Length: 406
Image 1 (cartoon, helix red, strand yellow):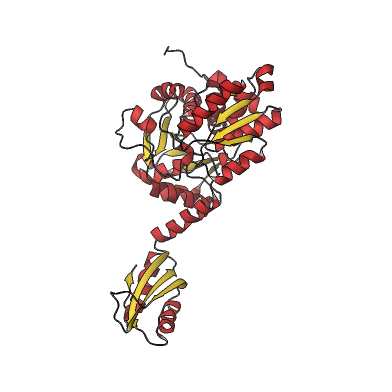
Image 2 (cartoon, rainbow, N blue to C red; image 1 turned 180 degrees about the horizontal axis):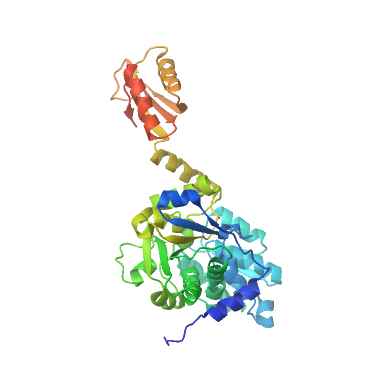
């Protein structure tokens, strides 16, 4: 590689002119509550408010505008697990360009559905992104299509970099110390790092990856274990960063940190609970990094990119429920007693008088660890918090029905 930057601030400013009026200049807002939780001054860039609920349409549109008339007529093909697919499909339809999107068969249904609704031909092929990419390449060769890469492309990178222009040049924005950027293939962080470092050389650019997919972290010298797994951040579940993206990142990204699933789940929940917005796992990764490494960001002026909000409703419900369990606002307790009429009613009254809500009850008379004349109740209760759960358990003990947590 030469020392000449593959993407420059001028390229990103040119992209901003292309995108002007075509994509939303999303809000950048200070979050008082997230600041209190993390110990930093937190500002959030709400890219989930784009029409396709993701930043990806910035790079997709910028790349599509660079096609020749012949390429536009022949059409384009893209490979994506969802957000890039929707960005390409939406803007290709607006520009009258035929679009084919290859998605892994494991892609969440809502992302497949939305991509089809934007008018693209959707092909589900392969268990992994690599297999889907190989099929997209075969279609490119067979049908004469132009491949629109999700991240390893200078025009795509420039489009994503417009986010940093908006964050650093918005009226009323703080003098940021740090920008935290989710990392999959690296298109977003390489664009943001290029713009941000050109405008403010001393700013820190911190990437965050799902711990199951530490691709850029490993390339930049971090330890790496097994790559892969069922992360809720499927939008950044990439095993290798793009080559252009890595060349930029190794020059301009200060550090890449990892976030475990617990932190990603908590971040999704906090965005919903505090900011009243929906974040997908990848979209919440910046906040997850702050939860996982609080000392690194304490006292800093931090900009987070909430980069996407496309999450399957069933997965979202599961994340919320798991958070309630983790915070002991949902708790399962087990009570073993004599199998006599009225026992469940008495236990229920104690729980109700203590201010808890019974969500479900399982009544078991045949478990071998229960006496033949006994009965076992598994009771799922809803409480205000962990202390309230302890209070309910103490009330049951005092009433003569000592439970054990399930």
